[in-house]
Length: 303
Image (cartoon, rainbow, N blue to C red; front, top):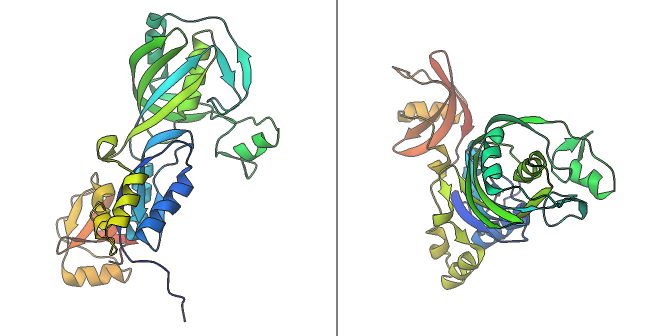
């Protein structure tokens, strides 16, 4: 007999405003505990020293996490000049120093070199695997980690302000896999100096933005305000929040039954390419891929 999962069977998204110095995995554990949820996961890691939008999926919404991991993201980053560090942020030890301070006009002019499809080397202290081991594990053991450049996309970089001679702030719109710490390091090098991230905040992941993000303190207070957790549950966003960018198709009850059994269906008038959200009576049934004139389920929701 299968063991029953502990916790409540609920599904949806929480737009968490992750606090400073809390890792993404502990943040997920905290939200799961607050909601008494059976399962939870996050869409895109944030470093402990970064704050901001961390979408957390509960229950069946975890089956849509991959769509958020691929979603466009926006960051606001403060860059410090004159020093490089082992981690490319404030957590690391100083490596090299430079007395050179570029003019603001030089910084603005250099931004174009880092937009579009670019090659970027991740920081040594990153979750990239090298020989089957996380790079940060090797780096913490004192090893020098040589990571290969990867192709990433940065859509736009906006110069926000020059705080002083040693600091400036940018806003970055980018795709999956971009390391803002690497951007700060490489931008400073191109400007003839050294640099590192002094402050980092993620302000958007796909449809989730910082204006609607909820802090852990607020969620904790809501959990204490109602023993039945109704106040917390009211904060849940629909499972389909992560699927706004894919087409939806309403299917019949018979088709929904077949999809739930893992069978393909052949609805009339298919006009889609790529993944499709299948719904029955306005409830999500599955995500399916098109194969010719049929739709095959790849993620079935047990709601």
